[in-house]
Image 1 (cartoon, rainbow, N blue to C red):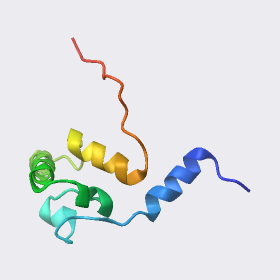
Image 2 (image 1 turned 180 degrees about the horizontal axis):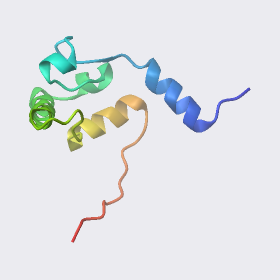
Image 3 (image 1 turned 30 degrees about the horizontal axis):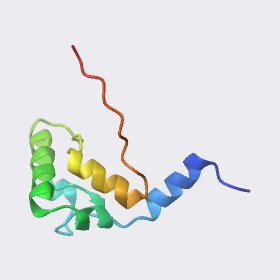
Image 4 (image 1 turned 135 degrees about the horizontal axis):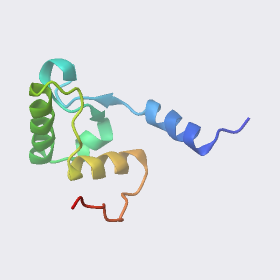
Length: 92
């Protein structure tokens, strides 16, 4: 039986090699946990900015932090998807 598009997307997502740049647990280091291809495509400064955001959220007791724009683009490229060109709605 053929998989639906969402099922195939989930299968592809789980087949990616996910890790931190240091190879240690994200819960211990506060680093971003990303696909290997995304980590390789980010510059050191871009990865550091994401890690800083993650650690700041962790210090506030959060388990998740929003991706930076660079991380989002790298993640989408690693996933084989193109980044959305649509503009986000801003709160007034």
